[in-house]
Length: 238
Image 1 (cartoon, helix red, strand yellow):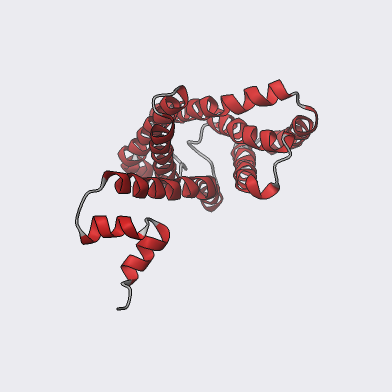
Image 2 (image 1 turned 135 degrees about the vertical axis):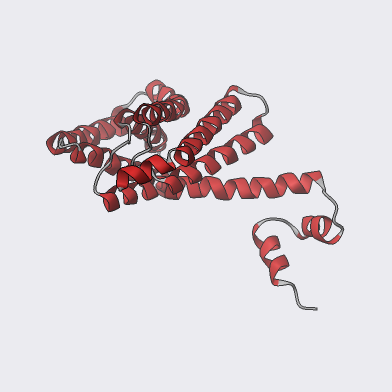
C-alpha cells in the first residue's frame, strides 16, 4: 500500500514512525512523542530565527530608505551578543561550517548598525565604526585571553536581553515601532520561545533556562508592541 504523502512528510521531518502511529493512527496523546515533535518544531523556529531575523530587518531598512525607530544602543548590544560566539569559535579553532550561520548573522548586524548611522546623517561615523569594529574583532580573534573569551561567551545572552529592553523602551517612548520589521520580530519571538522550551527540557530550572524564558517574554512584548502600534505606523507612513 502506498504511503500517504502527509505521513511521509511527518515521518521524514518531525517524528519517527512509532510516534506517527501513536498520535495519528491510535489517536493517543503519547507524552514522549509530543515532546519529541515539539522539540523538532522548536528547532525549526530557532533556525529561522538565526538565518532570517537580521536579514529581514536589513531588507526592510534598505526598502524604506531609513532606520527610524530602531534603537542604536539596542543594535549595538545585539552586535556584541552576536560577536561573542564568533570570537569563541575562532579562538577555539572550530571549523567554519560549525559557526558560519553566526558569522552571517553578525555581518548582517554590522550592516544594520552602519545603516542606522548612515540614515541619521553620520555616514563618516559609520565608516569609522566599521574600521574600528573590524580591527577589534581581529585582535580578539587573534590575541584574546581565554578568560576574556569565556566572559564574553557567558555575557552574550544577557546582552541580547538588554538589547530587547532598550528597543521596547524606544518603542514606548516613540509611540510607534518605526522600521522595526514585523516579520523579523515574529520570527525572533518564535525562536526565543523555541529556545526556552528546549532549555526547559534539557536543563530544567537553571539560570540559563530562566534567562531564555526572560528573553522569550521580552520578545513577546516586542511582538505585542508591533501589533499595538500598527495603526500608528500606518499614520506615519501616510
